[in-house]
Image (cartoon, rainbow, N blue to C red; front, side):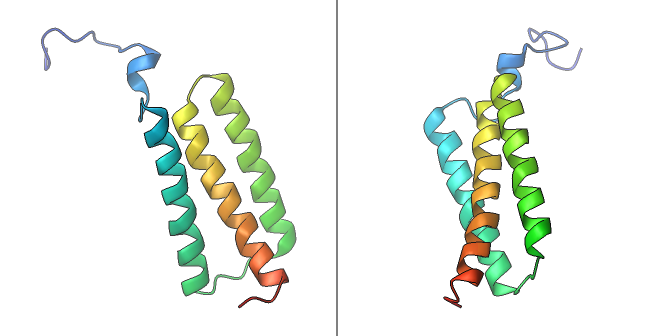
Length: 96
């Protein structure tokens, strides 16, 4: 037994990545800024249809994470969806 005192299969509550809501939101914000920064620096062009499709998939994934009580991962996927949407808005408004 590698870790004495720990059950072989931990409960779902112990499997969460981030247990504090503040850290979950912080991780989502961090993912947002990293993804939008990388997309703007490397000038990654994504067709609008593809971007909207990926955003809708991420929203569905976010809802699924909330349903199975993985709020931490849901906050991160919200950050990804908003980053993709923000990149499209920045391109359409011709700010860059």
